[in-house]
Length: 134
Image (tube, rainbow, N blue to C red; front, side, top):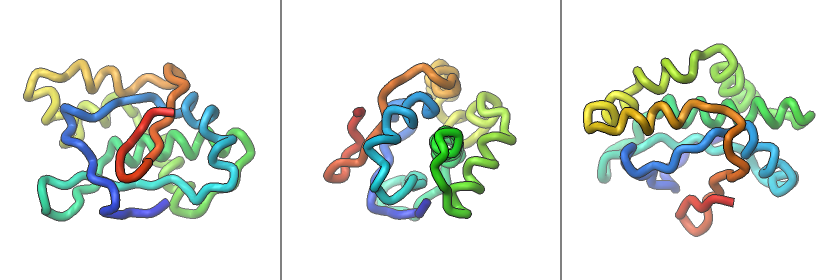
């Protein structure tokens, strides 16, 4: 797992939310020889990256699913998985900065939709700087 400014995360109101465990299963075969799980954060304009709880928990969910499939994890990835497993994800999403921003702008349903697990076969993949569903 790494932090990088290589990916500009869209503002919370424009983010595509997905659950990660099922997506991890479908992505696992594609990722067999790939690097790892990236944890980026978000930035307001050209400012520094702000760590995002939702990104860390999403990465932790993916790593948790991959571990259950017998994949190995780096210490950083294992830490993200442990955080995910020990967290009330729905509550964390409601209370994190992005969740509060979404609720304040009338998008609290986006926060609710972000928490369920095993609801999507799609995994976001970074292609030429753009996240695509696959």
